[in-house]
Image 1 (cartoon, rainbow, N blue to C red):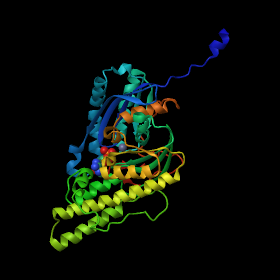
Image 2 (image 1 turned 180 degrees about the horizontal axis):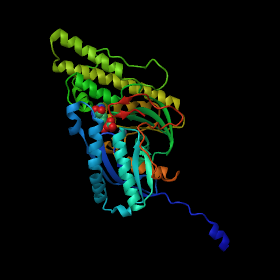
Image 3 (image 1 turned 90 degrees about the vertical axis):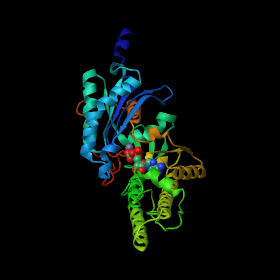
Image 4 (image 1 turned 90 degrees about the horizontal axis):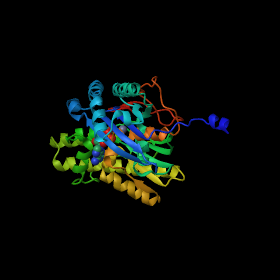
Length: 372
Ligand code: KG4
Ligand code: ZN
């Protein structure tokens, strides 16, 4: 029996406590997450340092400025994340890092930093798809059983995903042009509201008449779950120009009505396409949202209604885990580590990295990087 014992293979234990790094857009982040026996994650720390001030003067994220800021701030974020988790680097089981998709300079900064940490400590290294991080967040917070539907809506992303496993994603559809957050930001700029546009439009819309302008509901007449927000933005631009040329400016009520009309159109499109997505998938008990746009109350309310009508549970993770963060990257690595070996030092940064391996990625780039 001694021989049999000797033949037993050593099964690699999936890492439990992971240091995650995120730098694919305009937030530099580090976090320590422990995967608990029940499958959820305990976020021991999550540090996010934004760059809004650095880009404010340029009306969008400037990739070179973003990359330099990430390179400068990553070390500090890692130190803070470890301090807040009351841990030494030597105590974590693995290093995880966003390896794409995103603005390439930032992704390279993160991958280089993670490789340095892994090489110095001998810890395993996991390159994670940023979108997988968002998509697996409902497992981190609530251990939502597979399969579930995920609607990702942020300044850079917009897609419906059927999440069937830690590395099993089916893309049901997404935007063919602007992401919704991008549209909120651009429309806010058009009607002289502050940035970020989402909260400003939501606030202005409270005192607006959503029916004053007949804005389009793009692609609602087309089958499937693809969406478009660029034409809607142009419709707002035209309405604004008509008002400006008739009365040489916008009143506060005009701003409110334009904001309310635009938001109502986005709400209708997201609701209609969510109904379609739910109709396309079977055996789904839960629909989840992630991304900054999920903060919008009108959007949350309509998604709750759509979910109730379809008899599925609606879940929106806490906002700090909905927007870009490194806890989701650490947790995604923990989930995926049960299925695959770590990466080695050939891990490279990928500007594009479609989650659904069966489908081509989206064309074009948003202001926050590749649409993946
Ligand atoms: O996920 P996020 O923090 O960053 C990335 O896009 O990566 O999302 C930011 C986006 C911005 O475009 C912002 O205008 C939008 O989310 N946003 C909102 C709201 N709060 C933030 N959009 C609509 N309503 C909101 N309340
Ligand atoms: Zn993101």
